Length: 502
Image (cartoon, rainbow, N blue to C red; front, side, top):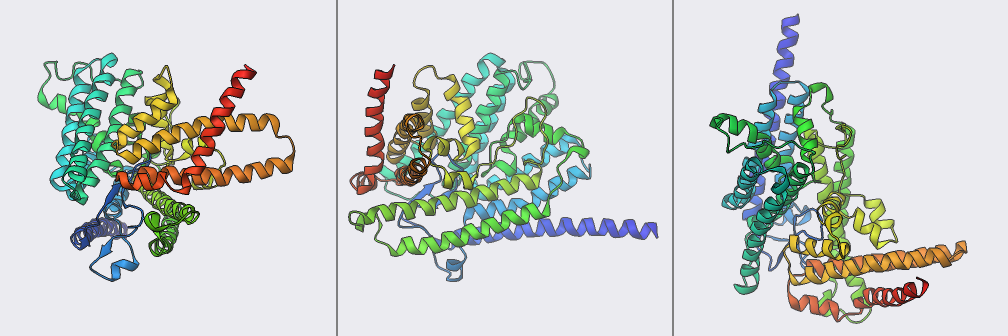
């Protein structure tokens, strides 16, 4: 009886394992077919705006044009397909950790091998652009002291990423060609790698993580060097965060991999089901809104006040895309056990999800929107730039964000405008809290500032997403520029008033 029971359990486990692997390969195969049957759009954008970095269509070209009609009704994103292909492996990793089925080293190798396989499947030969800086970072971390590791790794990583972005600029603006989808995915992954590299180097510099001092310079054997470097390699390339997801600190990553099976977070079926329903709802809304936007005039054909509606609806389409991808990325990390269910030790950074949709859609403060929009990236920028800037920290933070995103013309305008709007937001609401006492007037003020905030955010989002100078010029010459200009005027007046009060 007992032998039959254990045999049945073993058979079920093997069946689950086979189903997980088979479903992953089916998704990878679908993604390859998907990429081959896409008609290349005229302009393709990497998700930016300090957010998670997926591929998208620009304004007026909101959906891919497919050769297969059935895909027009059910829009599948290439990055979403690859994330879906990684999902069974994330569940398998968490299951094996809970069952305590393999050692710590095997866990590191599983995550690293999964990242390498996912990179090759999604990026092809461009995966070298991610592997090379990851390898160089490990070499720097293993050979440099804690005081100088951050400065050198930061310089190297940003230089490498900037060269790759210059390659994109050369292809788009000089050659007037559309880069391949795989190159966009590579750039997106490279930006996420920059987050992990700088986060790791800061942890070492601040003493939160103990580095392998003199790793390469010591006389240890090659196998010992590789064993010491394995956690770093695995962290920089682990597959649940390779193509998207909130920034996971090295401390949290190490605690998850090295922790005992009793501390492994068990997967909540209902939580993942709820996230799946959210993604489905957002995709349905995006499909409906994309039809409205595609039937409209667009920025080139709108007239006067109609341009405000075009701006708002197009920005709404972008936001739905962000929300959908953020929830999917968060689900993948949760499935692998790196999500909110993982307990944090004292002093360790907690899990910060990217999507706080309710706050983003209801806030009347641009400054709060900036902190809640892609929260893990906002926290990373605050730690990396804002807290270390002695003068003009806000402007330096947004300037670095524009550099990190690639310094396209619209991004320079958008992030500079966002910095000015946040500064104006602080002053406007400070003075409003001092002088507005009546509850009805306060409610009216909140409603008006909510509308104004949403329209300014829509303006910034379109500025960042458009590629060409002509599109930026159209946006600046439209009625939409009234909203940021009004805040600029209020900022100028309130600064003079502030000096008088002082």
